[in-house]
Image (cartoon, rainbow, N blue to C red; front, side):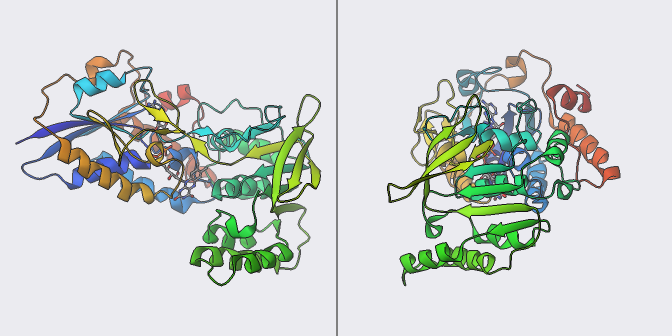
Length: 424
Ligand SMILES: Cc1cc2nc3c(=O)[nH]c(=O)nc-3n(C[C@H](O)[C@H](O)[C@H](O)COP(=O)(O)OP(=O)(O)OC[C@H]3O[C@@H](n4cnc5c(N)ncnc54)[C@H](O)[C@@H]3O)c2cc1C
């Protein structure tokens, strides 16, 4: 009975869905031993460190991941980084196939003057900070100004704007990092401008997220009716279903009476950021009205860009334009790629499922005679590997710590704390 060894690098949705696809193909004649390698001491990728804490239902997909992890033949090697603790060559030698599922975690840049001033950062820094990603706990987020500007027109921009604009007490029953709740409770930010280069008809927000905004209990959400009506005219009769649904959702917001809340989230369209100005820190953003020469500026102390992500290049893996170079998920020899590292930062969690299943079919087509090779345990030189059992101890400890304070979990924030919870 052929039994193949597959290494999956990255314990995010794409990695788990790839593992699940292989497990679903188990037969009496075909078996896979799956080792999942993850650089953090915790698995689940952006489901833990990206998805907004006020959207707990979305995180229930982690139940699927845990089911996959508890199937026979699956081992977790967390706190093990490809490129540091293990090389791609070692994986190629030890496994019949290697699946790269490392996502894309680098924030794209605007490329405008002043972007590197203190007070200007990417959502790729701000989001993991509030989600207790151990690499971002020490970020100094300056929340002392009255106005913050979020640049981008997708759901990540909306998550960021919402986190800044909602009443932080609303975060108490969530798994937001304690340090972020504390900082947001001290925040002076009262107006958050979410700014898009193009018109409402081109925004990449999805309508369920837009329709949820009027439910914010302590935040005024402002969209100009003029902007939406002009977009409806521009979109014309051949308007796509999703665009129409978005514009309808925006009209509902635009039609609402303004409330007396002191927190405001305001949408701005057709504004191209040209420069971020300030003496030693952010003081204003200069915009050009898209399609004209007219400029205007917004005084603010915080600018967060949410304009997309790029994959981190991995040594020995071909890389171009922010992604791993691939043809339908095939990279080279016995290497494959799935998820955001393959496609770039698009699609919801579920998109990674069908995508990974397609790539795993190709992987199986390519399999030859099983290798009789060594074990990853002998390759990794440090003794702080987080196994599935260790992770279960961390997971249970975090959930138990959250229970008395009404949170789904209280996240540990440093690697040391996480390892301690795992009794490592
Ligand atoms: C801020 C944000 C909010 C989102 N919200 C939603 C939402 O509400 N609903 C929704 O459906 N989708 C949402 N998404 C999209 C969703 O998170 C992605 O579709 C999905 O996470 C992509 O999966 P992935 O496995 O490719 O990448 P990731 O989830 O990023 O997982 C990659 C994993 O690889 C690990 N890794 C990286 N490099 C290495 C290395 N060298 N060695 C070992 N491990 C490594 C990382 O630590 C990480 O755990 C959101 C995305 C973002 C950025």
